[in-house]
Image 1 (cartoon, rainbow, N blue to C red):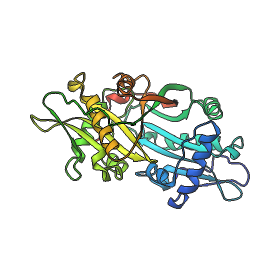
Image 2: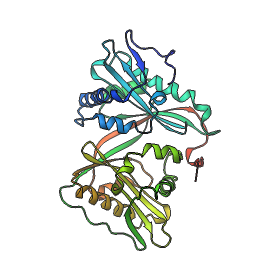
Image 3: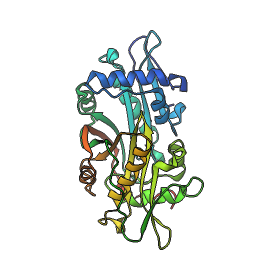
Image 4: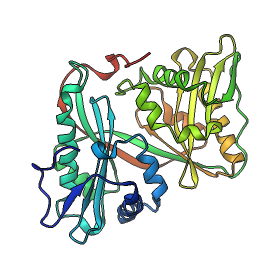
Amino acid sequence: MTTTSNLSLPTGYDARPPRDEDAEAVAEVITASRAAYGDEEVATAEDVLDDWQGVDLAQEAIVVTAPDGRIAGNADIYNRRNMRVSVYGNVAPAQQGRGVGTFLVRWGEEWARERMNAAPKGAKVAVEHYIDSQNTPACALIEALGYPRIRTVYVMAITLDEPPPAPVWPEGVRGRAFVPGQDEHATWSAVETAFRDLLERPPGSYDRWLAMTESERREPDLWRLAEDQRDGAIVGTVLGKSFSGGGWVGGVGVRRDWRGKGLALALLHDLFGVFYANGVREVSLSVDADSPSSAPSLYTRAGMRVTKHIGICRKTLREGTDWSAIPPEEE
């Protein structure tokens, strides 16, 4: 874990790596934090454990405990090859204003600084936080600590009150489910190719992707693939998962040469159909509000609506080569 010796906490508070048995208490902190600014979404221990999938809890996560031993706040890291470090933190409402949030922000920044030299040579390095626009205390704190809001992410949702339209596949394409033990590398490569030309996305690592998607791949019917019937190449993906009694869409990716043919909408309808058949009625996703592929418009056409505005608040620690120019670790 990143050293905390140079980071100050209020008297009587302590910090340590989380353990799996902390998941319930961390979920309570997240739920209470959301409720404080009007968000009724409830986090569960299962959600927290899912978020921790692929996270090295000893090195990439932290909990702050209050003098009574209860968890006052938490944070964990999503590390994109030490170039783009995303910190996801929460503070219990009763603990706000005591320095816990400031500690977590500084902890994340120190974590990123300690690993800057491991980033690809010459690449830009930045650390960022995702803050709900309704959480005004967190917005004010993060800005005061030198993290301006640089972009907006929409959370969009749909209620499946009736069966969705059947997918209409472009000529020469067929849709199918992911096959475990067969499609892992091809799916990862398809996702990397589809998103490589989009905004501010560092190239991924295959091994990291495998670790982060382990539980999702246990529901292979929710991973929908579009296959070129000529050569079997995967030209589009939509990766869904079960989440808090609903469904989550991990983004729709279509290879550049297949865009503009209706493939993305077909993939969405295909996944919505599986969710509906499984009894799932509420489905959500997150998307860059300024996506160069106009993804929000696609999701609106599919019947989704914006439910949240999330700010990406970022501090650049080292100027350098744009992430889109950095090659993947493995092709």
